[in-house]
Amino acid sequence: MKEHIKNILLIVLGAFIFAVGINYLAIPNKLSEGGVIGLTIVTYYYFGWSPGIMNFLINAVLIVVGYRVLDKRTMYYTILGIIFCSLFLYITENHATPVTQNTLLASVFAGLLVGIGIGLVFLSGGTTGGSAILARLVNKFTGLSLGNAMLIFDIIVILISSFIIGIEKTMYTFIAVYIGARTVDFIVDGLNTKRAVTIISQKPELIADRITRELERGCTVLHGHGAYTKEPKEVLYVVIGKQELMRLKALVQESDAEAFLVIHEVHEVLGRGFSM
Image (cartoon, rainbow, N blue to C red; front, side):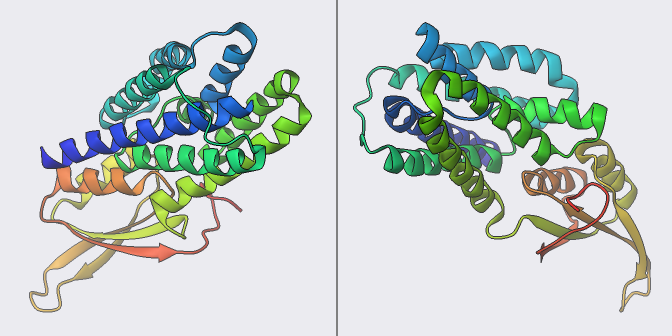
């Protein structure tokens, strides 16, 4: 229950910081964003539609379409993330006094705040919806990596935004999106983008099966034995990407509360399922 409450608080805090970055820095300076939030900003500029309401409606459709690609825990926290992001976007809409009218400063700090907000939501084990759901759908049916799929969606939305905000503001938007992406990486994974996890458990088959099905990651089984007891043991070894470490730890804890985990920092991973 404490873990559950902590995750909800992370989502609430992350959603609020995210909304502040959008409504106090990005929109007052005519900047856009990537993904679904970028679409909502475009509709706000062009039609005057509420970003909070549009964010909720678009993501609600994506949740219905993509619910099968998210496990129950991630789906639950993603729905909370969408609700709170939309709520705070709506509450702070049109009530925000611009923090700065310097477009460069706005793009830098909008990227930082949006990145911190999304990063905190990712730490809870959820997502803010949008590109994350679309990326999982593309990954499932085409094999394209999640990171590359999200990048493609962000670029498409930003290019669409350029017809509304102009080329110069689009260039500043790319700065904001890049800073936001790097901030998310730092919040979720520190300075490293991958983790190698060694798992010693009395239930290796259950954990390996859940890693394969729920995380869609390969898992290697190493055969060993206890130095003192001489009892044979199966040791699991798995390399995971960003946004997945919290989910893996929760998965192992749920499967075997007495499991022993060792998490290693990995600076580069080459091979199927990771960047080459």
